[in-house]
Image 1 (spheres, one colour):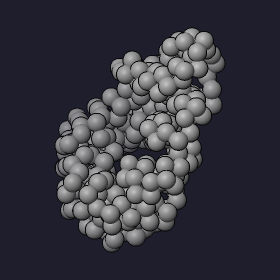
Image 2 (cartoon, helix red, strand yellow):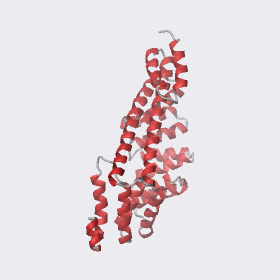
Image 3 (cartoon, helix red, strand yellow):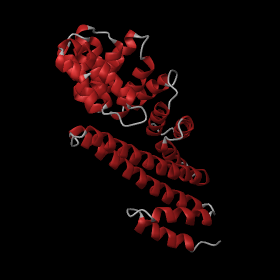
Image 4 (cartoon, one colour):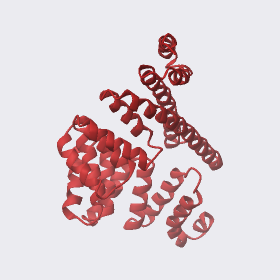
Length: 313
């Protein structure tokens, strides 16, 4: 297709479809978002008035975490179509990720005023932004409204965090547990549920939760490292060195995998403490060995193991 465009500029309209094909062809692999954004960008230059190309370019930038660029694309659409709901939703998300909380709240509020489309998402993002600026009471109203239209782990996780900030511990546990039930890969949800159970002094309940979060974070770390390997393969296939976006994503995937492995070890440590204090010496010893295996937890975990070993069988 690229050769056709070079030979005849009338084929310029294939840029959009080539980018779409790149997205479909990448199923099961890391999508080369740099290539996709470039193709959509060339299409925008050729057809600057195309709503379809501008939205596609903005959404690709949003997926690539290029939030400033994404925001500019969505705002370009809104200059011509001020109530374009998809563009408003993209603008709201971009503003949120850029930590422009008041602006994101205003955009979400406008979506809610217009009604019909993206209402649950607008409630979610308004709650998220209000939570970030510690407006917990209004955030709680929003997130409860969001759960009426959304049933994913993300909304229940946010509800749990807001409930915890409001010191409503029973509700927080319920929301965290629901998030993990909806999505067993929501490791932070079961982790937070364990922490709240400790706050409630329910150690017998907390121990198994930390065992589950330990296993969950191990799986998460493995998946993140596989994602990084796929991205490396995609870059190699392209035949050019990693660009700034590629390197940022590679670094993020490594960092997230490292964090997941640390949280797995911390989960093991917390679980060992809970089991040790509730008569589960054997389980505590099994878990503390997992914590010892992580270099950042080794010294602290070895000290705890020495105490656990002194407990009666």
